[in-house]
Image: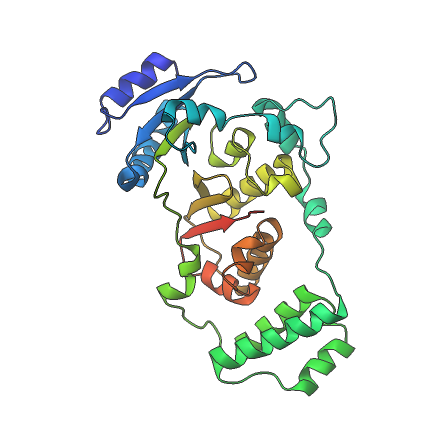
Length: 309
């Protein structure tokens, strides 16, 4: 769709008064629209723009123009810098970091090979600490916990051999003793969406069909460790499996709405492991276990993933 057509549709929208501009970059195939919005109506506007995706042929994404007192139109351009993409792991000197090149490489990523590479450690000291924490949490939530003999038997049989299998074993034990425990909204409040207080929000319209490919335009901090190419593939898989659509991108934080939350405990636990693998801060900072995150994922339709230095 041409810029004139997009402008015409925006003119007839409820937000026709919002300041906006087009951004052009030498490394981009298409222009980017940027619309300055008030923080309290950013999501409402995103919903309207999402409903127009088939017509506009662009994906709306809430972000922010960090930059103190400088004008937002200058700051938002800086968010699209290619410098961070050039310094991601596994990036070769001759690799193009244009959005189209990053997206093309993401289509070649094998997630079957990517996930096993994010291994959980089995350091004896950390394993002992993780076991102690798991026992304390289970006791606190359920009023009971596995006895030492049960845990020793699981270790001897190889069912517990690292932190991941420890979490899964406790998860199964808890489900056996109190299946499908219902949570309250407070139990997943750690996934409440971030709302910039001191920085104005901007909705950018990206020339892509879905939110996953946004990571080819704006780098997520997790790419500093994992690379943008596989992370785009991960987000596409979540789109297909769970209907997880990217709504907002704040550099270190991604926020999603989810139309098909996991329906089984196995699905939920696998997804929790994936969240923890790409954004360990999302669980570590609020002190949430994989087990409790899995249960929350079955009962909420929004996610917030946070990865920071």
